[in-house]
Image (tube, rainbow, N blue to C red; front, side, top):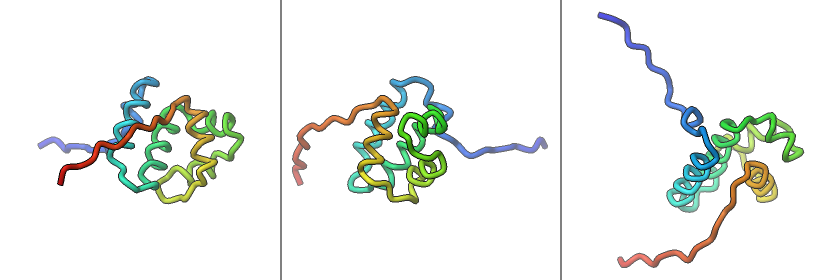
Length: 102
């Protein structure tokens, strides 16, 4: 019987276009609740898809510190998040929350 080789699924392989990245961020914002580490990790995924070195140049932040901040384990400042969002070319939008009927 042949050996089956598996590898870890990586969302970055599926983030090919700016639209893919924006839709991924939008979906994750809807699911994140109050988990800032989740959003930081999502931004890290998008940054890896676009190229972390280019993001470092565009934000003026160090590549290693970006990897750490956007790993889901870091605790980036809101200023860092805003720099990353702008450099990635995505926008955040606010809409009123639909009240739950529970």
